[in-house]
Image 1 (spheres, one colour):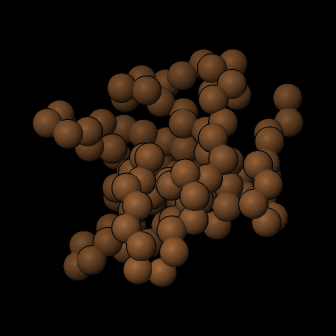
Image 2 (image 1 turned 90 degrees about the horizontal axis):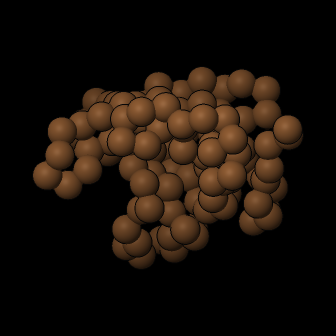
Length: 106
């Protein structure tokens, strides 16, 4: 689904509300099980991948917990940067109709 995603953490640490609000990114959010793994994963792409097309995601979190809250979706899980241990990550996702960026209210 086309969404504006706000990363709530950086390097595992929580970001301030002002920083979060200033970093909203429009793109394509995908939530699904990954292969044979029992956990759900979320990937965020700069654009919607076409069927069979491989695009590297901008961000990915694993073993997510999804909570629908009025106005959007909170995804919490773990990111695993290359050659680093996994660390907590959360995204606030605001779905939008069509492919227009959504915004959060002040």
